Image (cartoon, rainbow, N blue to C red; front, side, top):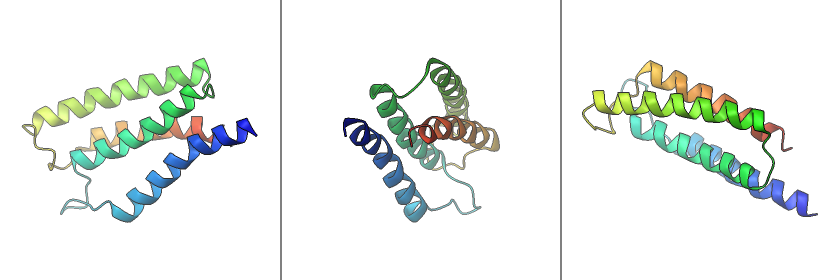
Length: 115
């Protein structure tokens, strides 16, 4: 029973986040997410991942993959934010979106193993 509750506790925020983002996220005028939207999306996904870590559901290899992807994402995000002059409403550049997608993929692998 405890294992089931831990899995629910880990997956529920991720599910709610996905539903919220799918229903609420709007695209910038050119169909590209803004820096703020990308950062919010990654923040929620990292929260779900961190909850899985706390629950003891993440292997060392999974943690290394997610941490590497997260550091690459943070570097790309900071570079994009600097290039935009700190404007969070600026469109996210393709390289940032690619790093965000890599991080999403890495986290999705971890969360998929919890079911």
